[in-house]
Length: 305
View 1 (cartoon, helix red, strand yellow):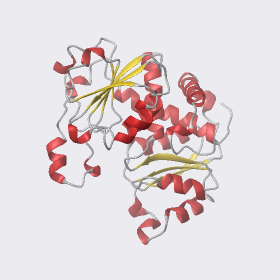
View 2 (view 1 turned 90 degrees about the vertical axis):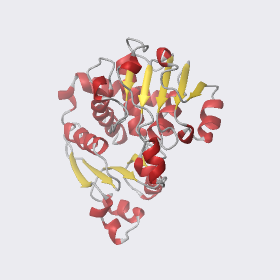
View 3 (view 1 turned 180 degrees about the vertical axis):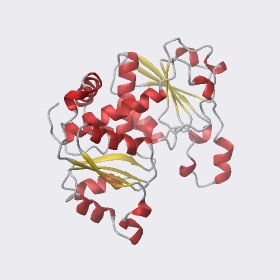
């Protein structure tokens, strides 16, 4: 595998291998501290990011490599009208691997067709975010010790949430997975996901608007924010942004070993009174992201772990 554009680029076996490598990195950090010595990662972020960009940078630094790049399109030659293809072609002369976030769906795929070095899709519009999905899978594996036999609640913006789309696609390949899809009617998951992933793979799912109705059944509760940047209408965003707020009261019927996840940033959808609950996994989840990205960098650069 040369690039990672979509989570479907990875087989289940490859995902399992990445998770094994990431877990080994967690246990044996020193062993990996110079694996990428002399290598450079270009972090090209045409769209704002905190965790994804910094975790890529931290991942490369902890592997002994170096970082270059930019954190917004305004600070790149894109502001002068340069095409993504030209930017990628040039950066390929300076770096060994590229992590790219772009607001336009499909931009990383276009970049991969022009690049001489591996491209990692770090998020393209409302389409894909495969390294967040790998982060989510590592989190579930570490917190639940399995990736099968799970009931997963997905709550919030299921229409535009690229993390949700990628996670549904990935988890649908594991055995005995059931989804509870919790959203307002305006933000239900796209029809193509139902047809091409859930229905096609005979995955059981329930759609509901009530976050508490199935709380007691959930092994995982994956919260998402309503994304202002995906809305064309400000009034719609204001009306929906606080539709779900998870608090201690709503968790009263939840399992004692529920894993509460969130790709972050959080706005209001999880009350801070949940943060001290041992079931709150979202900050640990952000930390897992660094380790799975370290494993991915090693894989794409074909460096043996």
